[in-house]
Image (tube, rainbow, N blue to C red; front, side):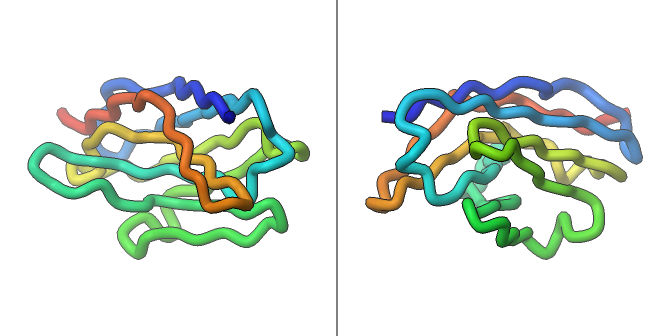
Length: 116
């Protein structure tokens, strides 16, 4: 089992920045990849950024060049640096961990609101 706790969401003006953090605990040895998903009202949950234990990253096109995912050496935490935020980035952001057995673990989510 893996437990995930997010922090760092909030309200920010367009063009501003936020940093999301996710702390992982439990069976960390089983984690293959971690990442961030988001879900806006009325929309499906989508992958924002992910990072494997080998360092490979993946970003959805809409955040490339604006968001950066990073991790601790033991994959026990990840950050998501979000710059040049836009109103369309408004969503609940969820931390995800995927085990080597393809089991998904989720945090409870943190709200990010981009509005003037």
